[in-house]
Amino acid sequence: MSEGENTGASLSESERARYSALLEAVGRRRDKAAFAALFQYYAPRVKAFLRRMAADDALAEEIAQDVMVTVWRKAEQFDARQASASTWIFRIARNRRIDAARRAARPDLDGNDEAFQPSAPAAPDDALEAAETEGRVREALKNLPPEQIRLVTLAYYEGLSHTEIAECTNLPLGTVKSRIRLAFNKLRGLLSDD
Image (tube, rainbow, N blue to C red; front, top):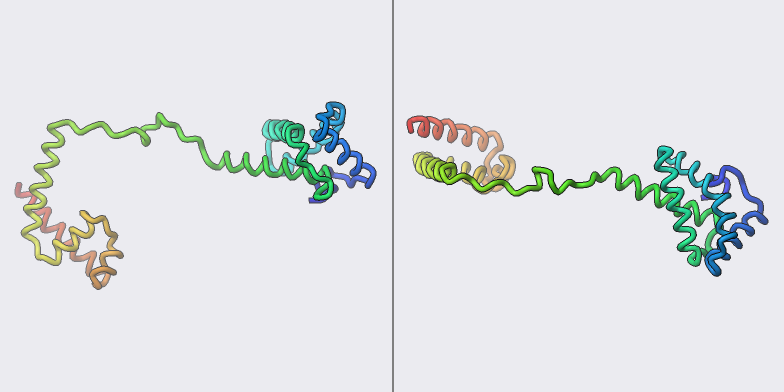
């Protein structure tokens, strides 16, 4: 990131040296006057930079304030041999904007959302009915040919997809699908008699 890219205008060598010296004064002595000069120059430029990074006005203002607070708190980490003051400050701004975009893309989870609540325990009569139905299905399964029992077991008790069943049984996918369909038609007929 160059000075011109960040501030909209190139800084002269003397201006670069001045802002670096101001930043170093904030880092070494917590110089409030130096910080005020940095704030006056950089805060509006940081905000404009953030607006160009697709932040709305309120977000750009919020991030710009956060950047300048970070400049105050972390100024002692600035090293003029590594980067200019502009590069250092605009790097902070860029990182804060990226963080804000990531937070916006990852919605906050609501602990009260029904999806995160445990399901209510089944009513005793519902549990009894489910157990009876499962027993009838297991009995009806015994009337199927062994190959169909195996395919239904793989699909519905072990949770394998038709493709996974085809792979583990070395049967063509179409055969797996048709045998499972035949098994269900037969089960439907046996269970409808109940």
